[in-house]
Amino acid sequence: MKKLITTTLFIGAFAISAFAQSGLTKEEKAAQKIKKEADLVSALTETGLTADQQNLVRLTLKEAEDKSKEIKTDDALTEDEKAAKKEEVNSAKNDKLKQIMGAEKFKTWSAIRKKQKEATPATPAQKQ
Image (cartoon, rainbow, N blue to C red):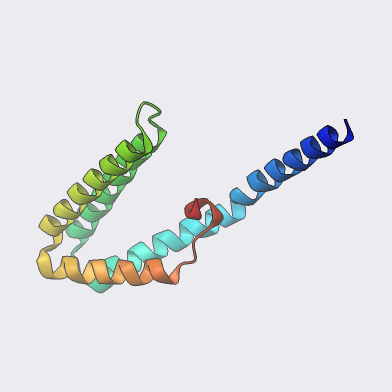
């Protein structure tokens, strides 16, 4: 009986600590959102896009993000199906960005975004 109680308490403590570590505080989420926007503005500026192009890029990124969120929350899909659909969304997004920016600016854009992503540490929620 003591082993059962001890095991149950241990599992409960482990579960609670696992859930506590995966969440971000409101301040961390706000800081993350500000950093994301600053990186986007920086990339748009460095790429040398016009105001109209910047608006089209923002719209394209927002549409892709919304579609990805829908896929993530679709319980009817398996993890493999979700990954395949997200890849389709990402590919379509990149094709649209290439049309908006042109091939050369898209290469510049991609390089800038890659550097920004590498410079940003992953949060516990992103590692899962």
